[in-house]
Amino acid sequence: MGNYKELLVWQKSVDFVTEIYTCTKSFPKEELYSLTSQIRRSSISISSNIAEGNSRRSTLDDLQFLKIARGSCAKMESQHMIAKNLNY
Picture 1 (cartoon, rainbow, N blue to C red):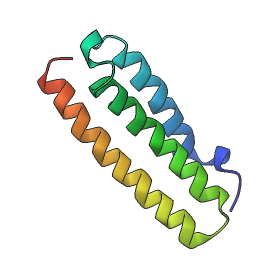
Picture 2 (picture 1 turned 120 degrees about the vertical axis):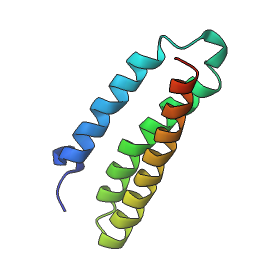
Picture 3 (picture 1 turned 90 degrees about the vertical axis):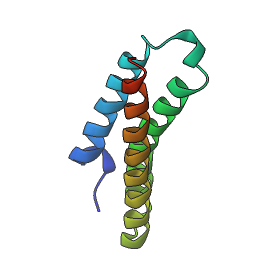
Picture 4 (picture 1 turned 90 degrees about the horizontal axis):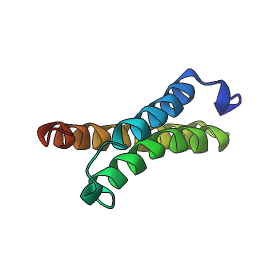
């Protein structure tokens, strides 16, 4: 296993977090501690879990953290649908 920073999926997930922060800046202020926060935390969790799993240097650990990252993607998708339904 190499450095997680070399993984294309990690690089793209960091770019995704940056996009999420940009998009959620326009959310209503009353969402700051609810949907905005949750969306941002879910997106951060994706890259963080990819990095942590890869850094463990164990294939089983890496797979487990990739599963967690995939779960964060599903959460993110659900939250995106809610934001879209609310016209944010």
